[in-house]
Image 1 (cartoon, helix red, strand yellow):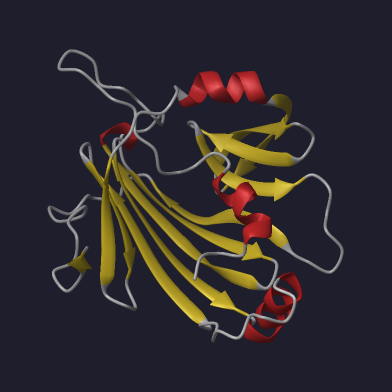
Image 2: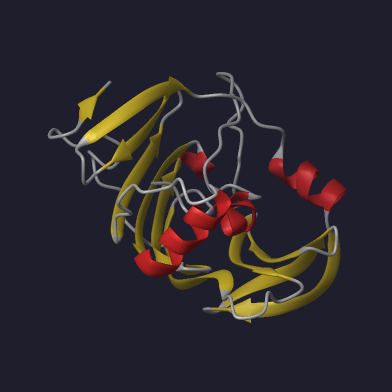
Amino acid sequence: MKPFPLFSLLIFIFPMIGHTQSDSAVVKKLYGIKSCKIVFKFYNGPQSGVKTIIFDDWGNMEKEEVITFSDTAIMGKALRQLSGGKFHDTIPGVQHNLRIRTAQEIYTIDVSQQVGYKTRSFALFDQTTMMNSMTTAVGTDTLLGKPCRIVEMQHAFRLWMWDNIALKKQLVQEVPDMKMEEYAIEVDDNYVIKPDEFTVPANIKIQ
């Protein structure tokens, strides 16, 4: 089951996963650092979890692993209300998902079910240009020793940007009785990329 949609927009509004096509002469730099490992903690209403991002080649190769813990009672109640009482499926308490992107393919994987799907990578607009056109700078801060620009998008989302990477995301206006934010708890910019870092695990069946 996918993350609760109310906060998905905030978590993915500036996706850590994306692809900008490159040619043989120029390497497109999605991020301002060549390789890195970043671990995030996130809260998404009745869900919380940990997201780990590992990228190389300035963001042109990337792996995102997400482990989500759900409050099944709250999730079930909300979905039954939205469906007019017709929703009866069992909601998993823990979800383990993996997304791997190379220059050619994107793999979306349910690790618990050991199944995945493959699509072709696609080009995104230059992320720096998009950020400058859609956000307003509101300040600066330091997170985990990394200098960040704080920007706001349409007075709805606030992001702490380091080297074109959002180390923290939150709503400008809090939602009563619902915690919704994402923030880095570890940044390793000396992380050594493994030879099989962006290889789909052997036990995963790609459909």
